Length: 353
Picture 1 (tube, helix red, strand yellow):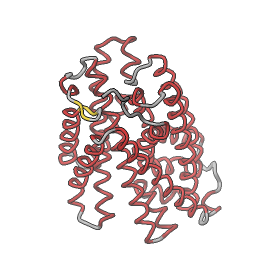
Picture 2 (cartoon, one colour):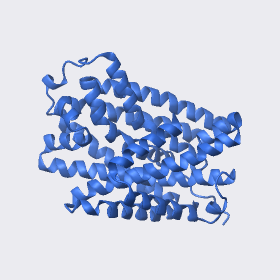
Picture 3 (cartoon, rainbow, N blue to C red):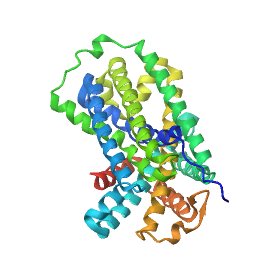
Picture 4 (cartoon, one colour):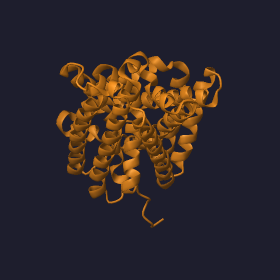
């Protein structure tokens, strides 16, 4: 009982941020942004990444200044009062419930393709992964961190393998000219791409769970954003140079599958589906982990009923985790994937913009 609670290492904290960044947004915006910016998509990624890095540094400095977890809720409470902060807290809860449901629904949809089973099983597979990852969270910080490390770094390895193979097949006719659209389109695509980086802010909820947090929290934030920028620029370039932005415009939501299929043929489809399902799993795990930490902070401020987080297991608020699982599964079975994607984007924009 006297031993210190387990903490996230620098690597573990970085993987938690990467899990949401890579799994939670980029694959959804790569196709549409490529369609908008054309061959300059990798420039748009760089601009979006620079903005994300500056935002991440601001979040780091604010968190260190307040020396508390809680992110935006903590930052605005002294400025705008408890009523506005309380409203924000409920929007945050709603945002993470719907984004978690979106990740789970996406997982279910692509898992049916990977397993070659009927589309009708997608909601059940989404519900199953939610339950399994709730168990992972209950196993404690060490196991959750180990599991996230395995998911995200395996995924990065597969993405680098795909990018390396794609570099061998790129066409100069497709890659050039780089600046084929007006600069305003490149900037607009950067705005689209920025959504793919927003997952870094979840790390603020884990502030006190990070070992030597005053030193490692900002390092994990910067490392996660910089790694994702480098990976995203590479993927955006090989996508336009190998597949072509015309194909991206026709099939924006399956651009990664198109790229893998072009480079590796039939094996490419399997590889792309593995990458996407691993990404969604990592995003769900990191989001559920961080969401539980946010709930404890909100309960401490009586913005949600304290009883929801009073009973804890391995540092996880047990009753609140049950609430998350039940709510997300309910959403999965009542809202289809397209409607869920649109509503999740609306809630996220309402919360963070």
